Length: 66
Image: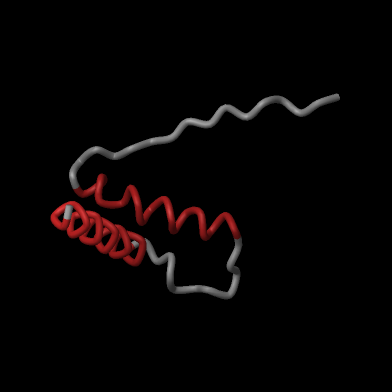
């Protein structure tokens, strides 16, 4: 149980480093939910890029109603 918690903390710290490398913490003047979501997703999935996984998300947006 303790080893799992240590792995999760290390993973999240690496994710924060990945978000920092991309410059997400430099300009906090235009804070928005979209920017917060980007930081959160990068923090969670950021280490996957270093492992060579390169995750991609495809979103299909429905056409607007008439």
